[in-house]
Length: 177
Image 1 (tube, rainbow, N blue to C red):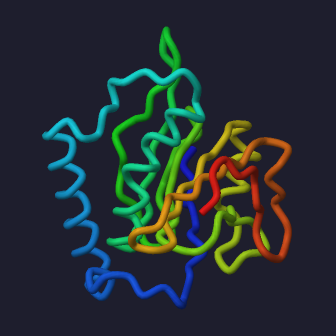
Image 2: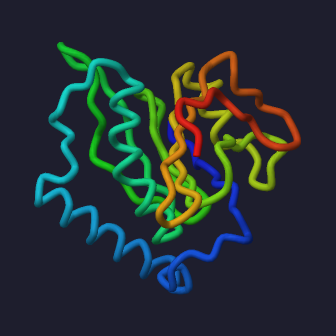
């Protein structure tokens, strides 16, 4: 089953001029950038990390700045292997979400906003909290609020990611801004 993830935008954010382009153009540019990084071995999906949190942090540090620049969500999975965990090749979503099946733990970005997971009481209901509840798996989130700022990372886990709440579901912060 695939779910659409919903970003909670930061209307005051003044991103690059790329965000003024039509979504299809931004998606094509971002796919080309990720393909280039892939071909140059800059997206090391073959590396095994000691924990799922380490794998999620590694990939979100790579893709959250691109998510902010292109104002699109990026998503993928965290998968176990015989020695630990690795992340899958990043996929390009839309400005307000992406489709991620429930086969493994997930990672995704929001192009702006705070480290809050969408739920049924946010402007785009469902999404993050419903995915966690229905899959029974962790969902990691990475956001870069400013162009040169750090990437904030949080995780929404079964039991700590409420489906209701006016300001969204905060999850557990791994690294703040």
